[in-house]
Image 1 (cartoon, rainbow, N blue to C red):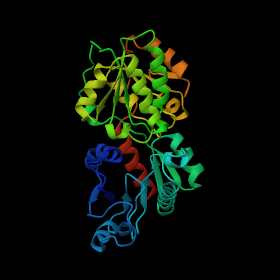
Image 2: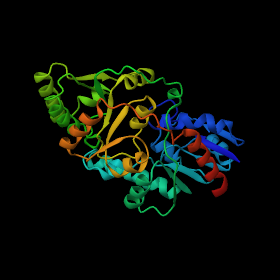
Image 3: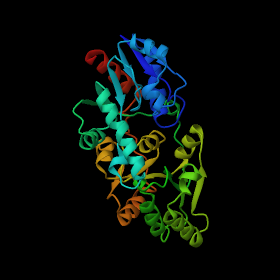
Image 4: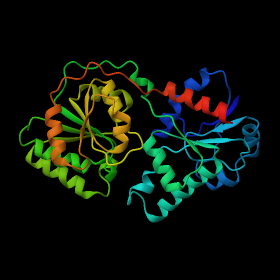
Length: 334
């Protein structure tokens, strides 16, 4: 089978990581590939209506077309397999303006219309795609995995006294709940620190209530909450290894990779009991707390903070399995 693959997201974070982790396993397979990487912006007028003819000829000479996201060039005549990781902008109000939400919904629905089948990363995302987009196409759950730079991780035996959060301050990430819980925890554990990992621009955005909570905590407990800013992959791995605990208080995710990263680093994780986390992490050694309940979160943090990491942790997700599933589905469903 000859597969045309959209390379344009390669090298970028998020979707790009998903694609770049699949790529080596694609290349190891027995299939032939055409890697399409024209200088055409994704989700653009040019992509939809003026995609280069010579590029389309090469793509249409293949058996199927795969894109790691929901952008699909106009003019493709072979079966298309696209990927919708989540529909958070449709489910969580206020993440984008009305126009931005409508534009995103247009591209989601366009992907559904033009695709033979859809890939997604969890049963939860599959359910939400069906509910929001009235999708009747086949949707295949293929999961995320751990990036390859975690293959050589060595967990730290000596932990440092901090909790780590990875993300931004968009309301579905639940940082407000964590800050409330942490403020209560400090009354009995003033020695503990909270490290927020992510771009400072993400944190210092429109949500002044988050920043006000951080300032209040730091006023009473000097430097209890710190920002790292953006960190490179190796540094993030190092921070996770040294942390006593990862807290992922999300209200909504399509999958949620940070708890996987923490477990691989030998670090305990306290995560919200939202449906997708119960699905993905239900059989892994994490601690669940009641979503949006800062009191319960504080109690779970206190119980888990000095707890020894479970030695029976086994990995159950991998990009190798994901790549094999995608290739198998395209081969037998084309």
